Length: 170
Figure 1: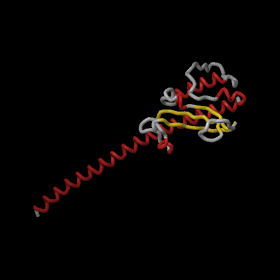
Figure 2: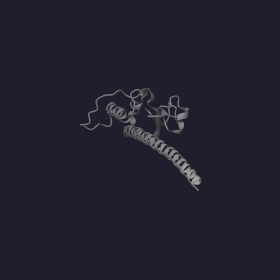
Figure 3: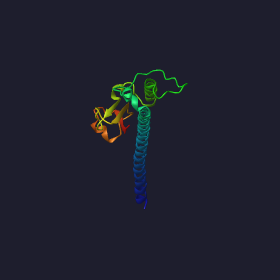
Figure 4: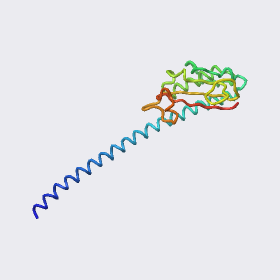
């Protein structure tokens, strides 16, 4: 009887060790999921900011369609002073673009370094800048962590740069 009792003590120690290993693996999995959740949240915030900024610019263009050519861009406009003490007039496209570009720099990471990834153009079809009835706006930012978390990231030459495009009719 004593001999059987010693086997049970050893078996209990093995059970405890296996339980600790399984518990450790589970906790590490939870930590990894939490980290991924934070990354997805940050990506979502940046995408929402990009969508809001693009929509804002499109609405400014719609408010002043006769000045469409003044809004067409091949890069992000230079930073400038945006006096918000007085309202911006609908026909003051230079001030509108300066204020918009300043918001972009505040809300999206590394926008200044990616200035050449921004554009506003007339577009006949998605991703094509040429004569067309639609206006296409592209905004870019540097993604934190592993890069962009969207479906087009694999086709992206630089997976760390996210792009958002908005097309709209005037």
